[in-house]
Every structure is written in structure tokens, then in C-alpha cells.
Length: 209
Image 1: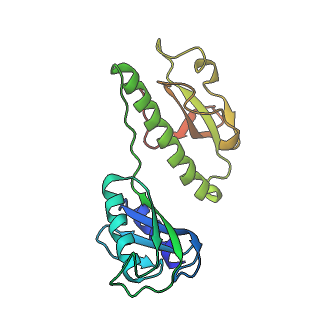
Image 2: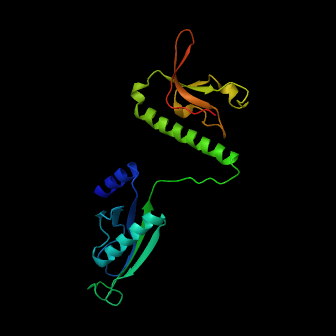
Image 3: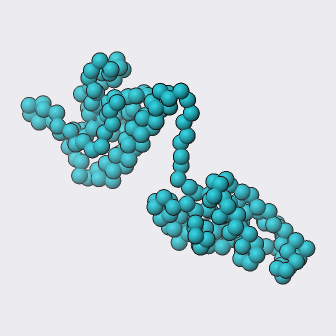
């Protein structure tokens, strides 16, 4: 559990690391299938894949994997012939998968306007997902509020989005998917509705283009 807690901490902090897992063994081996070692960027680690010179090679591969962001499958024969100075006498074989865990990146290539539209929509979608998680974590504080579709009603608003303006739902999961399309200029907000039907919205960061 300590390894997974550290993995969650590192990924949450945006720090690269590498997860090394024994995926296959045969014969006698110091490490068993599914044993794991989590390697940090500074070379420190949590867990083990068997120790000794084998683990030293895995550590080196993990640091390299963080550098080029490519996974590796390592195979070791644990005998004195392959490791003459190690004292290894197990005689078995082990395979270890080294997976770099880094921050995801999106690379867009194109004529400019297409890539720009995709990037804006990706930002909108990520923004919506973050807000959905925040709202979900605070559902007990949002009792009585409704989700409302708000369209930017001008000449650039498409015929798909405009008719949805003002539509309300009791739950975010019931609302129509947003963004509706590339360059969507609408949002789904939490709204308060008073007796005069004045629309008041609980608005956080929003993006319109």
C-alpha cells in the first residue's frame, strides 16, 4: 500500500517516476510475479523486485525510461555465467516490465486553424471534467440547484446549441454532453432560479471563443 500511496503522490504532484513489475518467472528466483518497485526521478525507490545486481540494472533502466518515456521489458537469467561477479545461484529466469509514468502530452500537427480548434475543445472538455469532479465531491452542498445549458447567442452560435439555451436538468449526468462539437461556445452551469425567473449562475472559469 505504501508503494501505491507514493505513486498517487508523485502523479498528483506531476513528478515523473517509473513502475517496475515482475511479469514472469521460471525456476528459482528471489522475486515473484507481481512484485513491484517504484523508482523516483532522483533514483530513490519504494518496493523491490528481488534486490542485488538485478535490481541495480532495473533501477538504471527505470531512470532511462523516465528520460525517453518508453517502456522496457527486461529479461534476466539468474546464474553465474551471465552475472559472474554477482554470486547468483538461483538458476531461474525473470522478466520485468518497466513503465515510465509521466505527465501526458498532446501534440497537434496541422494547418493551424484545425489544431487550434482541437486544442480549444480539449481545454474546454478538461475544464468541464474538473468541475464535474468538484461538484460531485460537494453534492451535499448543491441541493436544490439545477444544471442549465447556456449558449452564447450571437451570429456564431450553431443551430445545434442555440435551441438548448435555458434547458435545465436535476443532475449533471442527465445533461446533454458538453462540449457539443469543436469550437462549442456553450456551457452547462449550476443555476439558481428565483420567482422572477432571473437566471443566476454559479460560474467558475469558463472559455468562449
